[in-house]
Image (tube, rainbow, N blue to C red):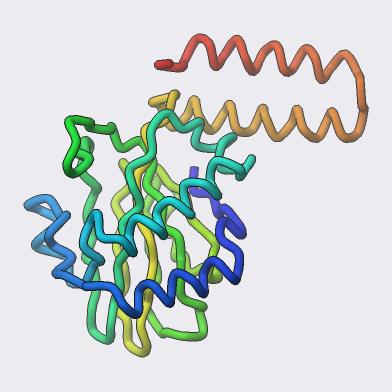
Length: 226
């Protein structure tokens, strides 16, 4: 499932991120790449654990906790602390698949990367190129969203970032371990949850809404790891 999550951050929050990024220390993006990804990666990142990264990451995580669409789609168990990157003219990230397991730096904790997320922090008109391209069984999907919007997609997907040809592309990226490991199961639960919402809006109090909710939770009970 490839799903845009709109308005994760407000305009004011995006502006605050730009203030912090302007003062932040940027390092070679390959510092967080696996062996294969490092061969294809050409960008810059904010140092993990820096004050700027912590403040922006906490704002993103707090926003996601309140975002009903994200919760429904991801069914998050654990979220990797958000990272932040920038692509200047000529920078790119070739085709790759994200590491299956990520160690949370400075802790004994690891997460399984079921879902990948990219939160755009630059307006589309501020740069050319830099599209996130995700491949799945239906072909290649090019993604370039407004600042504050996020794209959520299976971490099993082959994906890349096209070269930036003008301006600077800022973004946050991170991974989610879902309570439901299998993407097809998460997609079915998400579709069912959306249908339940529609039924409850169209037919408040109808028995069909209760029956569908019962099906949803019994499927979640069957498939969830937690």
